[in-house]
Length: 217
Image 1 (cartoon, rainbow, N blue to C red):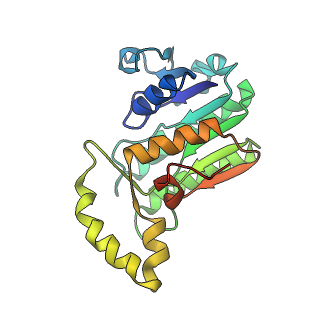
Image 2 (cartoon, rainbow, N blue to C red):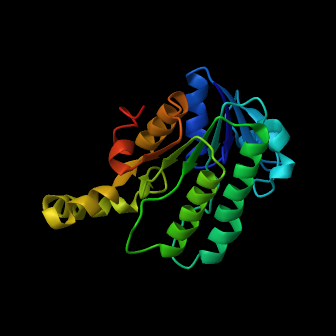
Image 3 (tube, one colour):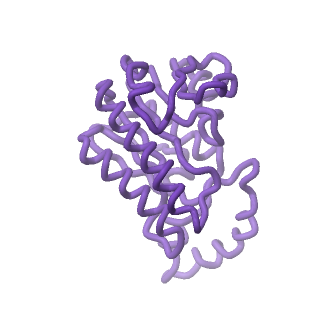
């Protein structure tokens, strides 16, 4: 397949592109001027501003799938304005570019919700989902809570707490929906989404991400 990745130089984007290339897909990666060398070897670099669709939408034409991974690094409380300036504007631009290019499948990494914390982040991601839905795009929306990996390991200390919460019927569903996934699980779920495009909208939650997306057709 021909895949366009916005956010291809980041924590999830680089390993995703590497695996897509290993699977013999053709990948174009969006990068800021001067950051092209941060894309994996074999990826076709597209220089542009992720917050301005006009700077890159012409290069999306001919792709089957658009994967949107642009967002504030290390989301946390107190970053509401950053979420509005980066996450929301980024998905607005991506949806415009996807519609302009006639993309057949849009993949968006959202966040698990509802949740007792990170309300500003969740609200922006919900708005992103609504934009995709209103555009009428065939879409896969993945809803992880936290992706464990290099530089993102502190929540490992919470695993015993999750085990207790999952053991109690009253908290089991919330603990599973807001569970922790690993970077390899997330990448596998994204690749599975690329290779199994849906008709309409498909929501992938934490339990499915932990399974690498398998069984979601």
